[in-house]
Figure 1 (cartoon, rainbow, N blue to C red):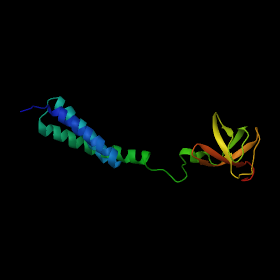
Figure 2 (cartoon, one colour):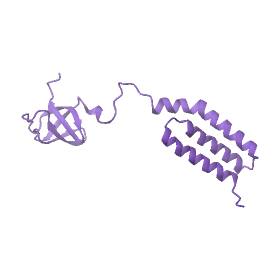
Figure 3 (cartoon, one colour):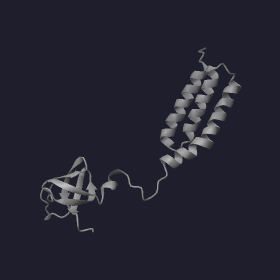
Figure 4 (cartoon, helix red, strand yellow):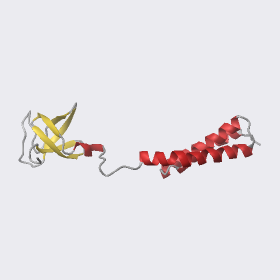
Length: 150
């Protein structure tokens, strides 16, 4: 019969809980993974199986009560006013670095340079013009006159 150290079983359990967390995203299984690390620690210190289970339960419970609410609030909750991704670029102004028409061109936004095209096919902006970003289509900024929204 193969003999496996209890700490190794706790380590495997911790990894399985962490892997399960990736599928659920609810931060419960992650707290159980932390509890399994608690059980593993007791096992490494030579504690009996009952003490290992107590270590698992206590650590998992503390993590569920103290850490999980903070983690959920910090990582999942956000207000509708918080923009992320390219949405933060909408409405910002940029300088034209390569003439823009309905087919293409380039703009400088801060330290970044973006490909850009005009909102309307017949609209064109020469180099040095200030334009406003109206939307982002993939990696291309769709721009319009900087003063039409003001």
